[in-house]
Structures are given as C-alpha cells and as structure tokens.
Amino acid sequence: MRFLITAGPTREPIDPVRYLSNRSSGKMGYALAVAALARGHEVTLVSGPVAIPAPEGTKLVRVETAREMHDAVAGEIGEADAAIFCAAVADYRVAEIAGEKIKKTGETLTLTLVRNPDILGSARSAFGFRGILVGFAAETEDLERHALDKLRRKGCDLLVANDVSRTDIAFDCDENEVAVFFRDGRHMALPRAPKGEIASAIVREVEKCASAVAGLSEAGSDVETTLDRGQ
Ligand code: CTP
Image (cartoon, rainbow, N blue to C red):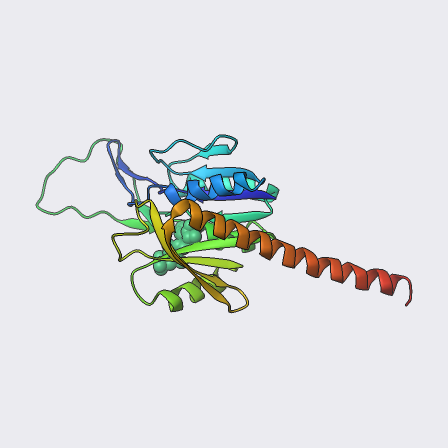
C-alpha cells in the first residue's frame, strides 16, 4: 500500500524571529513511517520541523506552516491508499506576520489569530480522498466522547486517541498509550508501549481495514458480474 503520513508540529511565524508552535516531537509520526516501511509499504512523510532524521526509504516533504502542510497533502494524497494524520497542526496562525521584529512597548501585547485550514477535515470533502483515513486526537478530558465526535466529523475509518494530560506518554515521549476507535463503533486499547510498537499495531489495523474494504468491493464486483451475465 502507499501511505501518506503527516507528522510533527507546525510553526506559525509571528515576526522574523518568533513563532507559535506546540510540543510535538514527531516521534509518533516517524514511528508510523518506520512501521509502514517495515511492513513493505511505500511512505510519503509530510513533516513539520522536528529534530529526528527521516527514516531511510521515505519520500520526505518538509513543511513549516499549517498552510504549507495543507498544500503538500493536497499534492500527495491522490497517490495514497491510506492517509494517517498524526501531525499536531496549529489550529490558528497570526493574522498578520510582522515584517520586522516586534519591539516591546506596552505591558501587554495582543496578537490576533485566524483559523488554519483543517487538513484532516479536508481529506474527504476537499481532496476527495477515498482510501483508509486515520486521524489522531490529543485530548485532556472526556477522551471517548471527543474521539468519536472527531471520527465522525472528519470522515475517518480509525481515530487514535491520546490522553495528553499525562506527562509519561504522548508529547515528546518515547512511549505512548492510546485507544483506537473504529467507524463501526468498535474500539481497542493499546496499552503503554514504545511508540514503535504502537505504530506497528496501528499499521496492522489499517491493513485489516483496507482488506475489509477490498473484500467488500470484490463481493460487489461478483454481484455485478452475475447481474451482467443475467443470472
Ligand atoms: N488536524 C489537521 N489539521 C488541522 C488540525 C488538526 O489535519 N488544522 C488533524 C490532526 O493531525 C489530527 C486531528 O486533525 O489527526 C485532530 O486534531 P485536533 O486539533 O485534536 O482536532 P480538532 O478537530 O481541531 O479539535 P479541537 O482542537 O477542538 O480539539
């Protein structure tokens, strides 16, 4: 299969020396790329700025901002059979990037932020993606409710939910513990383990999902053939 994976944070410039970002290290997304490659898949990795090297064998597309990530995904997703959106995309960017370094003047400084495009949310609607779609959710409370809501709203087949209120897993850690929610209502807990193991388990679930879809469409084409033959 051909996998498209987004990873890392995005960086939204404020002025020539400052930016808005988040604590994502890219480790989970890069682990997914390694796991998919190890299982014989092709991988395109659309990555925000991270400090880790890209796994050998991936097609790496480097981006900085959410809008750059959006455009890179729009350009690559047509080739993909599965898309995993693991990046921690900044939901907002500053309305106007200052051309010069902002000097301190008053006691407070107000920045106006505007919404960034929702890349995962665009996959089905704007990009017309028909493959297996996997979203991530970083939550600090009410994990299941938020995860199920995101899964439905964004048209995902799988939604991987992280509890980011914990300091021992998820952001910038080598281990993770997640719950995977499926479109058909099933869910599965992946207990605390190195991100590589969690990644392999997710890639296997994507493969299963793809086989189930392929099985269904094969069954569909059998019906058509039978009908074509007038039987
Ligand atoms: N995501 C994305 N583009 C964005 C924001 C998020 O592609 N602009 C993707 C992330 O990569 C992740 C999923 O959407 O797979 C969930 O992101 P999150 O920010 O938690 O979801 P939201 O729907 O934006 O919900 P909220 O911020 O309200 O929790």
